[in-house]
Every structure is written in C-alpha cells, then in structure tokens.
Image (cartoon, rainbow over all chains, first blue to last red; front, side, top):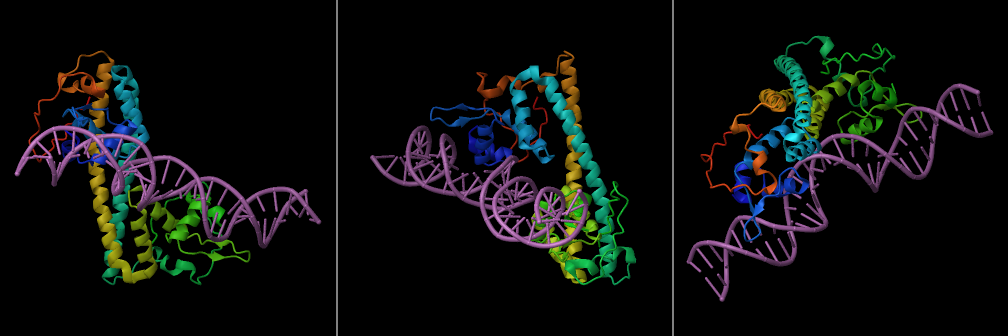
Length: 157
Length: 157
DNA sequence: GCTTGACCTGGAGTGCACTCCAACCGGTAG
DNA sequence: CTACCGGTTGGAGTGCACTCCAGGTCAAGC
C-alpha cells in the first residue's frame, strides 16, 4: 500500500500522514525502489486507534508519548495501561460534562421556544438583555455570591 | 466588580477577559473614574455559559456568532435556538463517541492487565508489535478490506 | 521518448485561542 | 511624598495541529 491508498483508507491526508511520521506518531515505513513509502495494512488499526485517542481529546504530546511506548514493545505495557487509565478518567469526566450540557441545552432550547411563541417568561431568566453592552442600567451593589463556591447558575438568558 | 475580581470569580485570567472583550465575546463594560472596567455580577452567568459552550466543543467563531446574536436581543431568538439545537446534536454525537471509547479503553486496559500478568493472549491481538518501525517482517500481500466500509478494528495491540 | 501523475523533501504559512510584555496611569497606605 | 498595587493599551509571542508549496524524482502508459 502506498501513501495515497493509506490516505484514502485512513481518512487522513498524505500531508498529515507524513507529518505524523515526522513527529513520531507513525513508524517509518519501508520504501520501494523509488524511495516511496510502502505500508502494511496493519498500520490502519494503529491509525484508527490514534484517531480515537485524538477525537476523544488526547493531545498530540500524549499520543506521541503513547506511540513512543508502543514502539518499546511489551516492556512498556504497564505505563501504557496507566496512560489509558488516565485517559479513561478524562473521557468519563467529559461524558459527565457533556451530559450535563445536554440538559442545559434542552432547557434553554425549550425556553427559547416558549419565548418565540410569545409566552411571558419567569423574570429569573430575563435579566440579561437589560444589562448588556454597558447599557445604562443601575449598577450592582456588590451583592456577591458566597465566596469559594461558584453556584454555576445556568440562567444566562 | 473590577477585572481582577471577575477573573477570580470566573476562573478566567484578566488577559483572557480583555481578549474576550476585544473579540466581542463579552460586552464592553462601564468604566470608573480612572478608566477601569466595572462589571455587573450578571456577567458571570454569561461567562459560565460561554465556558460551557467552549468546554463542550464549540469553537470561538460560533461562540462569537452566538454572542453577537445575544447582543441583538429577542429578534435573534430563533437563530440562537437553531444554533443551540445544532450544538446539541454535536454534543449528543460526542457523548456517543466518548461512550464507545470508554468500552474500547476498558477492553484494552483489561487486555494489558492480562498481558502484564503473563497471560498468553489471543493472537488476533498480538499482530502489531511484530510489524512495527519497518522491522523486517514479511510484507503484506494486498489482502485489503472490503472497499467502502472500514470495519474500525480496535485491536491495534 | 515523452508526458502524466503520484510521490519525495524541507520549509513556510495558517487558524485557533490565548498569553505575555513594555510602558504607562491612578488610587491608597505608610 | 512615594512606593506599590492593580489597572490601562497595543502588539508581539506561544503552542498545537496541521496544511500548503516549490522544486525535484520516478515509474508507467501512450
């Protein structure tokens, strides 16, 4: 398989494949007589996994570290597992945050829908348009929230 | 509230707050006698929401567009709702992808754990270390996958 | 033999999202 | 009075992750 085929199959561009090789994410492939890269199909599984790591929020440095460990073979199993466990934690956190956001969005979409229908809305949700862009509304009297805990009020408008 | 207080309460740096204001994510605040920014506590809700949009994967351009619409008030409700619905879709997709990754990671962590314990492993999962870094393994004989569908095999090693 | 197209290299350029810096100003505590 | 702290501005610099390009090579088809 040459780089063009691999690009097509992996969904990455040839530029990206060469870039990944340059920084060490991909192993240096064999070359044919003309100096062109020749890939084994097995590389696709590695690329897919790299892709998954990336699309679930692992940065290039950590991917690089993981690739480096992988190159060392079985000796690096423990460290690799630890990296995966750390990433698992982040992924789980992200799922939590996204799931929370889903309900925030659903509430807001619902609110907007009702406002679009001309419904009058709970004044608790209507205090932002008034204070926008430095409009001459009355100024705050320093009625701060309790310090330390930020209650994450999602009623911005 | 001055910019330092807001930084502390919002978790953003003063530089970031000024940067957000410059690009239009935050409305221009009032100034005190000395030209210093004075914020109403209500801005915290907006910042929190912006933060949520960001941390759930919305880029700065879309956040900017949303902020712009928000500045226009009720006239932009429909478009804002559409943006939120689009974002909701992406968030739902992300949750799916992350959840899938969670089980991929769990499988892999389990596999590594078993390998660390010295267990012999199904050869289907052991074909990557051999073909790494252009090592002199036998070359592929072009036994491609069926074209079009990439089966997303997660057994990279 | 010549053209075409895929590939090669090294290096420059891009877009995002900040982050840092120099040089300055204004209010307050000692 | 002066030191200091926290603000102000415009602009430069950073890190990530590509992406593009110029100028060249090589193999296959006509």
